[in-house]
Length: 245
Image (tube, rainbow, N blue to C red; front, side, top):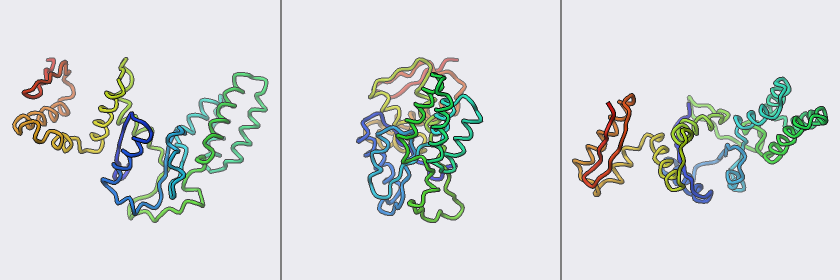
């Protein structure tokens, strides 16, 4: 379990997201005392924009690293051997092994193209291939009593639970502003402060008696999840939920 987990989400530019994430962290922690930051990502270029800053290091997310290997190498024994080498921090040996596989499957165009694509992906993220806890240049401070540093492989799981299950699939589509607004709401829900935010936003705008009704209805929908909500109506007098029987 992640200790003091904080979520922030946005569909704005990478610059805006960096500002949002920095502000979110600063709400909880004294950023002047942060010694090391590990950016665990899937390799997208915008994620790596901060690695030039002092004390910031990039690590290719373990899930995406393994996923790329398993999708590109058909033979599971060969795939798991490469994953084991990567997890052990044997970067040069991993590229040598992958090169040998490309030579082995030179005559198989489909397999060769997949291996070539994997090689490019890993090479583009070579700076983050070695797990952070195996790097000599990263001096991690002593972990607090009762806590231990892990491999950061929970990233994809958290994205799925916080955002993907609500926003993907079921033929849904979003405008950028709509997706941005819902993402922020879901992040605040994950941070367990959604009711506090509602109170702050609505204070002075919605009367106290109406605000109490809004809070009561939100609590009810969380507890009464098996009832199908058919319509949510918004009007100047407040909020009204119509639930199907």
